[in-house]
Length: 616
Image (tube, rainbow, N blue to C red; front, side, top):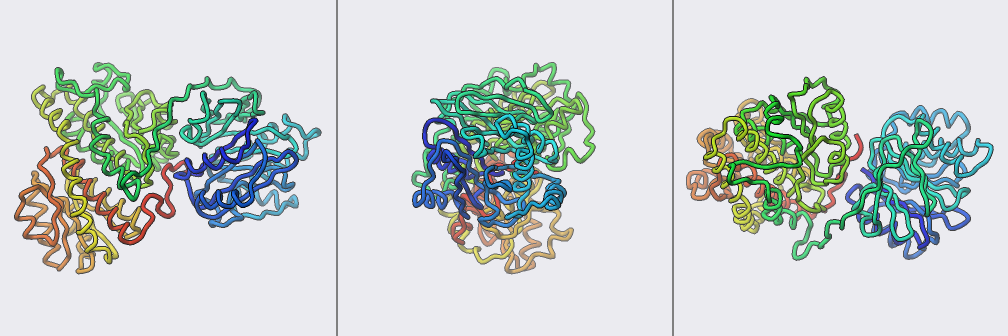
């Protein structure tokens, strides 16, 4: 989950490294550091906290040189201290290394190095790798660039786990090495410079082409040419360069205080984008050319598995209900973090959809590869169409939600749910869903952006309601059927950005233990639209009120019964039942947002979290 930027070329490296780190800060903001070769030795600067603090330190004491590496950290091994910040050095102090990933056998490697007289200044697994590479390089008959590549190959051959690394050595001068296994790393070329980066968006302004390193690749860059080697030995055929498109526009927050608030309000447009060109009125169906499957091939699917993590997993749960209702195909949801450790029954008639906002989630990539290994049709649903998941899947769906900067996902969640609804429509229409019902679904989908826009008009009202409950120490979120997934998502948003404990449950589970938590200080938020289980939800609300629990309800416009029963209500426009989850999540996003703002929390960069989870 850490961010890496490296630069080598004619121009000074420092400005590129700092600007690139700023673009990668969503990957981690515990600490940041930079190392630059000045022509004789490697100088470094590190700071705790945001990249802006490192930039201030460099303004006061800049580094000169055209070759460097930099890093923004999300802590795995070791506390958030300057000693644990990257880059890390080997025993000689002449090799600097940055690393994203986790070395699972770092303790055994450290013990071996300690036994050979090494000393360490940090608690990190990364410093162990730096020492291991440096030791191998120092033992080479000649300390040249070939020896450094060989040392990297040797050390990575000893390492177990995942890594994306960048390194330089004072003895080899203008020379960078990058390597990856399980953690994304890109090499870019443009205007007389070469770059390495964790994310193409961070360098897209400066490069014309990039290569995506494959697992086991080692890239060696000298500013003019490059070679790709394999950890297993020998040179590799370099991946084909890919032309870089214009990066997503970073428009700033505009009138909004936070990116999260802005992105919540962008949802009418992002929903239009995910549906654009994908609704077929003549056929009463949806069209996904990216699936790369004919209708005959799609009919061979007898079961679907949706896998993802966090917010994406909740979108999958909502999609499970939608696809089963529309297409009558069994759907299962699996946590991607558990997928490869379970023996999930898969076959050629079970389609697996690996879902990820970034397309770089390590757990989801592992699930995708496990699915392919077992011979199941494996597709991706993600917002980044040049990501690892997009490249390695057999087809898929792009969300077109644009850049999402807020760590807590909002607009990508609703785009995922709508994409799954359209997938359910497509699969239903090639089976037994009538054309007239398909058209009803299309009309419902097309009405959704405007209904979301109407819901967003309740922003100030929701802010006032949230202000009443900021002293709460716990929240309960309740929903039934597909709205259970929205209860889970609402609870997650509250935890992520306000740090208030919150739990989501099916409403009917209230009496099976959860009711023990109900008291005057614990608000319960019920999703209670006027649907087929409306009366059941009213009964559950009565049970909470009988025990003096405050209730905030999300219901349907004109519902006087709900308004008379609850402490506060948020009433939304009428929407078809199958689309209610998309509408109902909007007020929960806003409720969490306004609660966090009122508590003075850093909404866009919540503590301990990072946008793209690239470690297991």
